[in-house]
Image 1: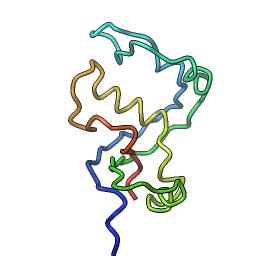
Image 2: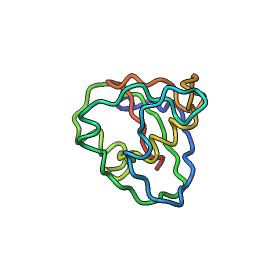
Image 3: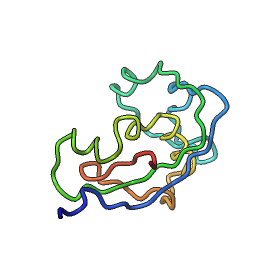
Amino acid sequence: MTDPLFDRLTTVGVRATSEGFLAKEHFVLNMDPGGKVMISYILGNFQHWFWEKLEEPIGETTLCSRELQRNASDALILAELGGERNVETTLTEVFSLMDSQRRGEPGEHVPPLDVHRQVAVREA
């Protein structure tokens, strides 16, 4: 028997939305602690790839963070996580998590991710 490919770290709920989500209306530079989400820098590629992206409203979801325990191919990782639909995290979900820590405070919801070993995916 082989060891599990992932260790599950935590789960976090993301609230449902009732309106579409346009990235450029939410990912806005802002360092005012009294304002919306504090964002100090937005990479040019983000704007190129996502600025005009309009997402439909989402239902309530649960995201899980998991830590990769060994090297694996993309195909094996996707299969283990339940397919591509389960591993796509929307900008709406990402921004919702940012909004829950809008002033940059430490997160009780999602631990800091080591982007080389950890993923956040929808709970299956």
